[in-house]
Structure formats: C-alpha cells, structure tokens
Image (cartoon, rainbow, N blue to C red):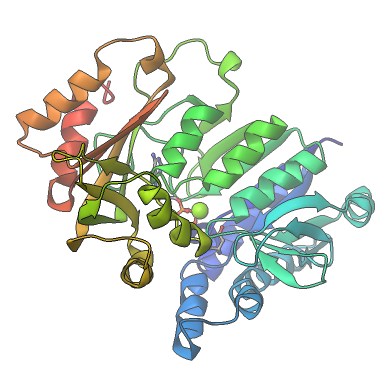
Length: 403
Ligand code: ADP
Ligand code: ASP
Ligand code: MG
C-alpha cells in the first residue's frame, strides 16, 4: 500500500475532543493508505514548558531544554495512539529516539539528517499506525534534540522524504495558506497552489502556517505538501515546485511580523571593517541580524547604522554592543514598536513597478517606511507597528489579492 504522512498541529490535538476528531481522520486515510502520523504537542503545552524553563534560569541548559520542551509531543502521541487502540485499530506511539530520527546541529536548532526506516516499515506491514513525535530527534551523543519552534512540520516532511510517501498533509487550524494571515485580515484569500520559493519567503517573513526550515527540506527533497484544516473538509493549498504552477499573480502573498526590534547606532566612526566589528559578536552569540541600512557618511568620518533583530534578542544585543571595545558611536537607540511587512511573488522578477506601487500605496495611507530590504521575489519594509493593519489592507487591495 502507498504511504501517506499526516501531521497534526497543536490546535488540531488541543483537547480530547479534537484528538477523537483527528483519530477519525486518521482511520479514514488508513482505509486507502499506510498511514504515518506526526503530532505536535497540544496547543499551549510547549509554551508552558518553556515558561517553566525560564523560571529556573534564563540560561537554562540547552540539552535539558530539549528534553523538557519536547515532552509535550510524547503526551499527544500517546493520547492519539490510545484513542485509535480503543476504536479497535492497531496503533502505537513512537518517540523520536525509538525510531530513531537522527539530527545534526546545536541543541534547540537541530536539523533532521536521517530516519531509520526498518522498524516503522515492518510495523506498517502489520497494518500498524505509527504515531510519531514531531519536533524532536536524537543526536550522535544519544541526547534528545529539538528542531526549532514549529518544527513538527519539518518532522513530517522528512518522514515523507525518507519513506517516499505519496503525500504529506499538514493539518492545521486554517484550511490552507492564505494571501495573508486570515486571522489578521478578513479579506485574505486562500491560495490554491504556491511554489516552494514563495512559501519559503512567506514563512520566513512571518507566515507561521509553515515552519521555514520545513519548506527548505521539502524543496530540496521535492516533497509535495498539502496544507488543510482538521476542523473541516475543505480543499487545502498545494505547495509544490514552480514548474507545476501554470499561472501566478505578480504578488502571491503578504507576510508580516510583530516580533522585530530596530537598533540604531548614531555617529559610528566610519572606517573599513566597522560593520563587521559590530555584527561579528552578534553572530557569535546566535543573534540573527535581518534588515540593515547604513547611511552615507556626510562628513566622511561618521555614519549611522540601523538594523533589525528579533525582540527576544534585544537585551542581549544591547549588552554585546555596549561591551564591544572595537567600535565607537555617539548614541544607541532601540525601538520595539516596529513591524516588518513583506510582499512576496515570483511575478515581480518580470514585472516592473512593483516597488513603486508598494511605496505609493503606503504613502497614500501616510505610512512612513523606516527600513527597506529586497530580494528577487520579495520586498520588505519596516513600519511603525500601529500602522500594520492599515498597511496590510492597503497592500492587499493594491495587488488585487482579494480577487
Ligand atoms: P499548527 O499548530 O497547526 O502548527 P500554527 O499556529 O503553527 O498551527 O499555524 C497556523 C496559523 O498560521 C493560523 O492560525 C494563522 O493565524 C497563521 N498564519 C499566518 N500567516 C498565514 C497565511 N498566510 N495563511 C494561513 N495561515 C497563516
Ligand atoms: N510543539 C512545538 C512548538 O510549539 C512544535 C510544533 O508545534 O510544531 O513549537
Ligand atoms: Mg505550526
């Protein structure tokens, strides 16, 4: 029988009622397929575990963090397996070390490198339904690892790759990928089919519906993904390679973030290597610098440098900059009241005037653009957080995404 991977997110398994509902979905697919299930933790559980770790220490051991925060998945998988067993099906839970799912890289941010298939395959042959923990793995030192927040998506995709599954379905609380977060803009429209490249940009720029790493894994391994709801039976969104998509709009979607912070160094001595001296210690401390602008120095001696980071990294960044003896500056400013809004679409490569339309549309709403960054298929702007809703709805209209 053909193999299918079904992944359920936190809200989909958030209560016992929901677990009963997803068990029905699983048993239906089991009539036609050999089913591999991946579950995330019940909604809220991972956050609670992280809060507990913070109560011990802000520098909680990262190896113990992984043991702690991955435990929510164990609980959800046992509940699903037991529900299926109580309905007369053959099922059992598998923790990632039991499979095993091997990972590489640092604790908290590992990536799946290999999945051992032997035991699961023989279990599938006996008509078993394995319920496998998402988000977690094991490293070459036999320690539990996790693969980043939202990582169950990547677990599912890597299982689909290693088992050569016919399909990987991501069940969530929305019935597909929308032109923008449907919980932020009512007029958002469901996208029928989207390329890996666009989905990767949308996810990296704030569309939480899919974890960015999972899309990279899917693109590299050519795994087709369907995103759909576990709450209704509506057709979802297909995420696939560009060649499978015949028609696309100039702009496919809009993403936004509310967890960025802006850092400005005023009056930095303008000499070669200065930007590197600022960013090196940040990167050594795993702080990701995103948008960067450096003003042209008016007097050839001093310049201003602005960049964005995640708000969670703000206090660490402040400390690192103030302790950095390699740089001189007049003043240091921080702003957490910012949002990054991005328009994404492969169509912009061949269509002139997209940048102009974006800026004009924001200008009409009197929204000031603070920082800009672009790539081949996206334009991002940093704006004041209070203007986010206005920006989303005007850009959504400008690029006719509600049609
Ligand atoms: P799960 O727990 O199933 O993994 P997530 O909360 O991680 O679910 O992702 C689903 C959420 O993603 C939705 O509730 C929605 O608010 C948000 N989201 C953000 N951008 C989009 C988008 N473009 N399309 C659909 N959902 C989006
Ligand atoms: N439970 C984990 C998290 O909340 C993984 C996931 O939901 O995919 O980040
Ligand atoms: Mg998720």
